[in-house]
Length: 232
Image (cartoon, rainbow, N blue to C red):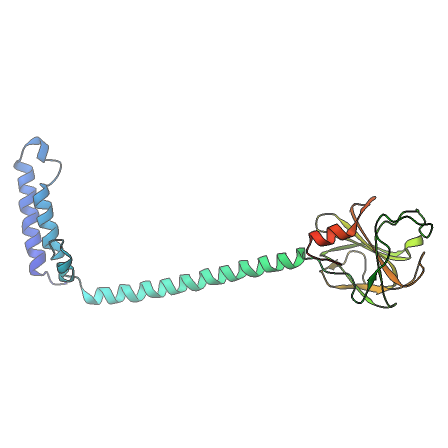
């Protein structure tokens, strides 16, 4: 780039300023005189600092265009990458929410026996789950994400499937007419795991649902379902 008059003037002022600093007193040797510095700055930029002079800066327009184009492309690429990363994180978070979301185990039901009721109808004398009565063969789905840890006939429970959730809670699905999953299979909320029936100790077709935070201690399923956004 060819030197401009402004650059030449700046060079003269720089030399003058340096000479002044060298021949001046000890206090002036470490820095240029403030007035000289301001003059040098104004000469280099073509402005005295006033807003009206901002357009006088002497910069190569070709250099500007090249830098602008490169920086714009870089910025666009960075924006695309950032949006892609955000999309991936959003999708991952959405998938995690879906896994933690609970759903009703059956549709077209009536709630009959509830947790804690006492009757000679039950082998233990106390009802340990929640009964969803409905037509035999109705689809049963997993209420939440988990792994199938037990399947098969279990005495008074009839055909039973146990799904262990991500936090270790066991959910029992009992009295099924048919089991549709295998031990070790991972299931998502809403995934079919079996069909309602009348196997075991029953008076009619229904799903007996139990929720067990630990394997030997059942709790009332209704508060747990409500806590997870499901109201039977």
